[in-house]
Structures are given as structure tokens and as C-alpha cells.
Amino acid sequence: MKGFCAFVFLILVGMPCSAQAGMELNGTVATENYLGLREGGFYNFRNANWFGLKVRGNPSEHVAAMAEFELRNTNFTRVQTIDELWDRSQTDPVSWRVRDAYVDIYGFLLDGDLFVLDIRAGKQHVAWGTGDGFNPSNPFDPFDLENPLAFDQRMGNVSLKATLYVGDEWFNIEGVVAPRFLPSMLPVDLFLGDDPLSNPLMPRFDLAAMLPEGMEGFQILVLPPGYDVLRTVTPAAEVGNVQAGARLRFSLLDLDCSLSYAHARQSMPVPTKVQATAGVPGCPEGQANCLAVQMDDVELIYPRVDVIGLNLRGDLAGIGVWAEVALMLPEQVNTEILTEVPLLGETRMELAAISDEPFTKWVLGAEYTFPGGFYANLQWVHGLFVEMTGHRLHDYLFLVLRQSLLSDRLNFELSLGGELDTTLGRSAFAGLGQIMLTYKPFDGSQVSLGYVLARGEAETSLEMFEALDQVFFRVRADF
Image (cartoon, rainbow, N blue to C red; front, top):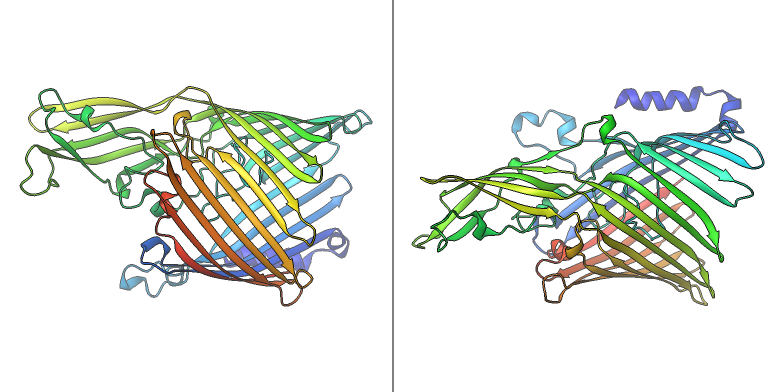
């Protein structure tokens, strides 16, 4: 860490004046604290502090370079044993991350009146899609859920992007190649909870099918597996696992349009093989015909998926509108369950974790600023990122209301989210709400105070936020 900081310092201080003239430097220092108002483990307290730096340079007219990184610490101590109290990396851990680091070359090989070719190489956000934070047509940018409430945040990945502009902005063709797969960053404690079997990452087990013949009258009690038996297999960085896609962008009837195709992988892991042991302790005392089953090993993989996307965005009578539709062509994944039953040996069953039947996700949205500066943003989302098969898609409605006062010094924002699940033959609802007040006492600074609350019925996606009842405080300075 010290070497990296010294390296950045030498670059900024030792750079020649001619190079500094073509360089932009921006940064952020911020701290945020979330305090739970109910006992709930994951939500009791969360703190994050970070220093972000963005550097952009232009060595020449046709070349630009950009790097953005953060120094960050979250929830401080990792001390578990007394002998770690001497180690600052455990008592006050700090990590640094590269958000983006890429080079742009404009007019690469082609720089004429009819064709212009630009390339961008390095770690970058591909940023496909037109939805505000919800982009089912973009499988390239993995999710960054370090803060689980910011479930529209993405991470950049190493890729090469080439854009061919044709004519006087008639249309452009964009190609993307990502040589490695980068898994999403997930709040595992939140997604898996106390029972990893009843969460969005696992299929619903047909417990009766786990019984061998002659034991149909027994009740199966599956004990929740510990995190140590859940193994995620990340695709190797080899040519057979390269992700790639292409996008055509054009204007039609004053609408910005795009058609895209991507060959990639699902952003969330699914179980492909489970090994279990039946007859272990766990059944209630005195309960007859009960068979407890313990998961010994669960292997999860990231399945392949092809995505065909259609995006529209424009202005209709002063109202900003957008639509993003993604036809998902998933790879079928079966979960093999091997159960060792005392005296009867091993039984085998197979469940369809993901069907290969095509399905569609979409986002429809509109935004409008009323006279007086009151802003409203409404989005209908059909299928969240945790839903990877057609028969399990839920519908979500997200509304953001914002009003600025005192020459934009004071900002009030209300965010509401609702979920409707009809996939199990009944209507189940969930909701998420946040209210935030932001004050900018001086230029380049802001202080935010807010409250967030969630409630969800069983087996909805937002059920994972059931224990959420928090206040938060954030201070930020930009320079």
C-alpha cells in the first residue's frame, strides 16, 4: 500500500509541466454510517470511509488515458484472536481498488469522413442499456453490492471495446471482448441468511424426491448448510470462456436506439452438485418418521447466457422515456443431489436449477421535471438480477421524487420500491422506502441524513431486507 501511494505521489509531483497541462485530477473524500434501529445482525452498524482519485490525461489529440481508484476501509476491525491486536492490517484494515483504468485511441487505423474507429482497452464499465441503474441487456459489468442497498451499482471489468462510426453520425457499431469473467461482489450474509437453502441463489428442493423407495412416509428435514460447504467455481481465464458482444446504435424518430447481442455468463452463481448425508441428528426429540439431511458439499457455477437487447431512449412532449428489453437465452443447469442414506446406500436425484427456455426481462421508465424544479422518475422492472429463469420473474416498481431548494443547497429525495410476485400461484408483496435530506453548506461539500425501511412477504426477493430499519449519515467532499 505504501509503495502504491508513493508511486501515485511521484507521478503527480514529478510529471513535466507540459504533461500536467494535459491532465485533469479530481477526487472525493467521504464517510458514511448506517445504524440499525432493530436487532438484525447484518444491519446493526455499517461504516465505510474512502478516498477516491480520478486522473485523466491527454498525451495527444488522439489519445486519452483515465484511471480511477479508491482507498477504502469498511467496518474496521477484523480481529478474531488476541495475537492479531498488534497487526494494523487487522485492527484498522484498508484496501485499495481500481475502478477503471483504460486508454482511448481515437481514429485508430480509420480516421476519414466515412469511417472512424475508436478503441478503448483496459478495466472499464461497458455501460450497455438505457434503464436508470437496471440494465438486463448488459451482462458485462458485474454487480457491486458492497452496500446492499445500492443494488444498481456495477464494477468495471478488463475488456477491449472498439467503436466504428459510419458517416456523419448515421450509426455506429460497437464490439466488446472481455477475456476474463469477474464475479459480482455480494453481501453473502444477507443473500444466504440463516438458511442458505431458502435464498435466491438456490433452487427449491423437492424433498420427497430425496427419499428412496419404501420411505415415502418419512418427513425430510434439510439442515441449513454452513458457508464453508458452499464452493463457487469461477470460470478459468481461457479462450473458451471469453465473453463477447456487439451493439448497433442509431437514431430513429428522435429516439436513440440500439440493438445488441452478448455471449456471456450469469452474474449470480447457481448450484450444480450437492452431496448430502441423511440420518444425522437434527429432528425434534420424539418425532417419529423424521429424517434429517445435512449438506456436506455444494458446488456453484456461473452458467452461460446469450442476451439479445433492444434499447430506446428519447423525449416525448417534454417527458424523458426509455425502454430496455432483453431476450435471455440461458444455458440449462441441472443440480445433481447425491444423498447417503444409512443402510440403503447412495440415492441420486436431479433438479433443473435453470431452464434453457428463453424468456424476456425489461425496464420501462419515464422522468419529468415539473415547474419549480420538482423531479420524478418512475421505472417498471420485470425481472431482477437474482431471477435467472423465466418462471420466477417478479415485477418491481421504483419511484424517485426529488426537490431542490435554496438555490440547490438543500435537496429532498424520496425513493420507493415495490415488488409483486405471482410466480407461485399467489400474490406476494414487498416494499422498500428511503427518505434522504442533503445539505450543501459550501461548494464541493454535502451532508446527508436519511432513513430506510423494508418489509417483504415470504419468498419475495426483497424479503432479504426484512430486518432493514436504518438511519444513515453521510459526509462528502469533492475536489
